[in-house]
Length: 540
Image (cartoon, rainbow, N blue to C red):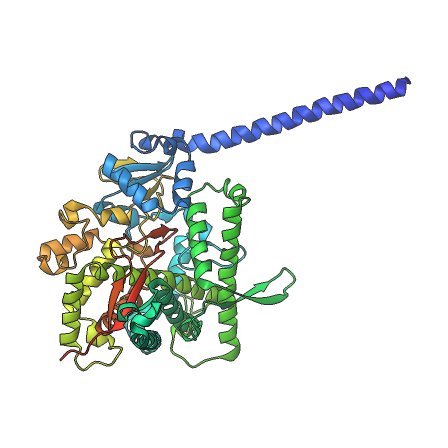
């Protein structure tokens, strides 16, 4: 063998050894970085060392990631609090506090707490943030100033005709089903026992999505009219080329909530790796598609114009402290925020209310007696003034939102310097704290020994002091500067929906002995509710 060949072999051997060494060093560094990412929160936050919780959660975010992905986070965390008490550690740097007196220090106006990195997972890549997922306090204040007038009582009154119009279309469709069932009676499956049998949740989704689309974009998706969930989605590539596809808005929003609520509890360094897994990758497409729904709708509205006094018009007219209006991309982001906030939430709540009233016949009879007595001259869809002060109807709404809170998880907040005390415990800056709504809505010390029971009467039997205690323990719309801006429109929609539906129909569940099945992403979403509906007989 020539000397030059021997030299080449030696050089190749040295390069190979060096390459292997470099790879080993990189692998060791990566392993060390991963170990540090896992262990540093545990080592840094000594205040959480004594707080009980799952063993894995003390050292890793994996426990909370897996729990969120399984879709039962609120129920699992509730069981942990029942076992361990007020404080439970959910991750190395995340503590859940199940006590209403923690709401103010964690979420209140004067605390300075920030939304945690959890909310980064709700931001669409390359798209402006809306008021919900904006973490910077100053920017959030600017956005909230622009949009807050859109949800003032005067604005809500202007929205009422649109809400009632879509609700009229909803009952027109149900009336058609009832008439068809009455003709079939015992002759066909849809007329069994004189009821029209259907998927209640599909219909409440159609109504809620059409209503918020009417308000947020100027016209409905057409789900109630067509009986189909098929909406335009606008995509734009990096060269500015646009294309429109069609998809299911309900499926897209559901998947977006699931993936964002799971990615959100993962540390930032881990998220790109999780997105390589099919479950995450598939659902992340829904995040992009959801933005495409908003783009298609806002572009249509801006191109064609409208003189409607709806939510989008009010967002367009809003200004910040400098008198500046929102640019088109920010306007689209806020319209998207309203679509998300006003669709799933309303459909989930209305479906849960139907379930609980149908499984509590005494409460249903009391409600229908009140509606029959008080709405004798009302139209098919009563006005908000007709229903806003009906005491038992209000008690039903309050109890339903307590028992089936729209979001049951504890919304995470990042503690700023120099740290804070909550219920006698000190938490240093950088700690993430949350108060689980599902659990504080079920505390016997606050709601009574029957806290696990659905009972609207609790709101009517309570004296003034007890009602104040209920209000302190209620976290339906969150609290503090990041509380839900749309609570007034939600209140209007639910009061009108419940009054209209139960004044007009008898509803019987196909499986009345089953618990309402729920899957949880960011929201607690009922997944199945088969029931029969039929027109009620006129009250003499």
